[in-house]
Structures are given as C-alpha cells and as structure tokens.
Length: 317
Image (cartoon, rainbow, N blue to C red; front, top):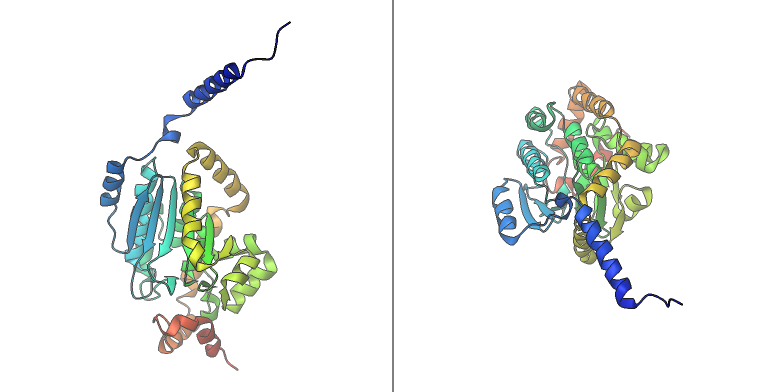
C-alpha cells in the first residue's frame, strides 16, 4: 500500500512548477532597472517645470512651475517629453505626479497663452488640444497616479482626472472647475470624466457652480479615490506605486484596456469639448468676465487662494 507523498517531493514539484511559470513569462514583464540605468534615465529626463526621480519601475514626478503651477507652453512641452520618454522605456510602469508647491498642485491653464500651449500639445497627439494630450495619458500603458496637495482647478483638475488614480491630502486639497463661472465649458475632459464618475446631477452641480470643493467632499462625490491625512499621503502613494510596478506589465495593459473600453469617453467627445472651449473663450462675454476676474486677482497666487469666492463676486446680484 502506497503512503502519502513525502513533503520534500511536494516541495520539489511546486518549485518546478514555479520555475516553469517563470520561463513562460515574457522577459519584458520581469525587467528591472539597475542603479546605473536609473541614474542614466534620470539624467536624460531634464525638464524646465518637472523634477523626476526613478525608483525601480516607478517614476516620481514633481511639478514645479512658479509662481502657481499654471499650465503654459513650458509645462505642456515637458509633459509631452516626459510621456514620450516614459512610454519608450519598458522598465517604467508607473508614473506618480505631485507638486513642489504645497498650495497649488496645478492651478489651471494660463489664459493668456492658450495658442502657445495648444501648439505644444500637438507635438504628441498631432492636434492642438490638451484634451487629447490628457486622453492620451489615460489610454497609455503607463499607470498614472496623482498625489494631490493644494488647489487643483480647471485643466489642473482635468489633468488629475486623466490620471488612473487620484489621492488627496484631506487638510489641503481643493478641487474646482471654474470655467463656467467665466462663461465657457471645461475643454480638457472634465465633462466626460466627472459625469461618468459622479453621475449627472453631481457633475452638473460641480460644473455649473464653478465653486471650490474640499477633499472630503471630492472623495464622497467620486472625484478622487481617497482623501488621506497629509502626513500619510506620500508613503501610501509610494507603497502603492511600487506594489503596482512589481506586477507583470501585460496584466496592467490588459486591465487598463478593458476598463477604458467601459469608462473612457471616445476621442471625438474630448475633441468636441476642446473645440467648444476654444470657441467659447473667444466670445466677447467670456473675454469680459476673464478681464474682470484678472482685475480681482485671477491668475495671481494670492487672488486664487479663494477662487470660488472670487468668481461668485463677479456674478450680478
């Protein structure tokens, strides 16, 4: 009568099976970056408005465009270059974005340089539209995470909405889509993303109010994944980024592709919103409101600490 298999035999069988699975895995999915390759990657990624640090398969990016991280041609040029370089490096799987400014993650676009930053966006997508640049990021094989502290409004909000995940500091993060307060539609994807994340009624509240929303309400509405204490935010995001970067790239690409097939709006919808913004911002009423807002401190660091209130003061009583 044959007895139960010996434990040593079972362990040997399991080890052989594991070795077989490793042989089946594509080499690109288990690729790692050596310390020398990390230094080379970082040295090649030199930007005017971004600071980067490579840790294994994760690229940590800090946005630094004083005085208040406005989206202008320099930042768009850097984002285009960073995306191209990161996508071309198979060892990089995750990109984390944070701000060097504790008060402003990304303010919004520089309304005085719209034509210039649109031209920079065309260098990635072939079309002068940051909406299509942001959608490219959503569809990229790269997994993107926004680590948000401070104010993120307008196209800044649309940038983090284009990222795959958003985590925010409970004490300091402020969200807003101020464009309707100036008489225009958000042109970088907010309508598409917020309607799918929040539902119709809450998306309309956020968009039509053009007001500021704190991190706890943003979490409740679905604008972000989680609101976390500021002291815990960085370590949480770093741990998550490294965990994801340690998994096979093939699975990540397949998951993103299927989720995007359900939740990411078609390119044509982003293009339409971008066109409507471009048309709306040239409208005389919108220009009048933008100029009135600038006189009250719009596009200044101090003036935008309470942008929701500033826009409310423009409304006729």
